[in-house]
Length: 210
Image: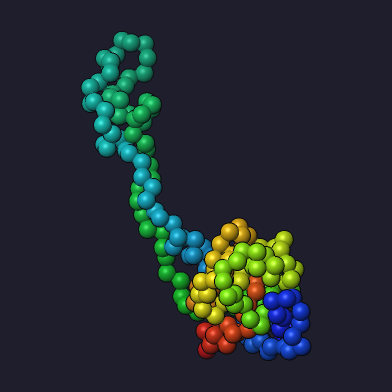
């Protein structure tokens, strides 16, 4: 399949680029997308949550009242979970949420996510995306030219261009990543994907059916 190539002014360059149908025109596998997004979010969890259980509480172990004859329920010490400040029953403990996902499933997920964007006409190829200096105003202007000012775009550049990154840092809805950082979650989370023309070959190399 072919897509038109635009410049940063939002105008057509008169050229088209050929996209691999095995990457950009497949039937999306929603379960693969779900698994890859789930793994991405799990990998980003700190897992440092912790609550004190009964044995870890610093209260005295003195029995609060006699066992019988008070007219109320029996009780032990202040560490009991029924009292305010007592230990928590089955509280959270530090853990690692990461899990393994086969590389073929991850590739399928990324191909599926990109194919979805193409089907929704939410994928744009830009000729060049390079700034001479960090300017948020310039990034806003470029997104406006591409009719993405009110969208939530993901911009994929060849290398981590610091000027482009700094220009987008103050824009809450815009995210810039290098081709090496591209992942399924960011593609799905964005309303539109903007690919620099130079990243297409790398995407073909990494995600082509093997």
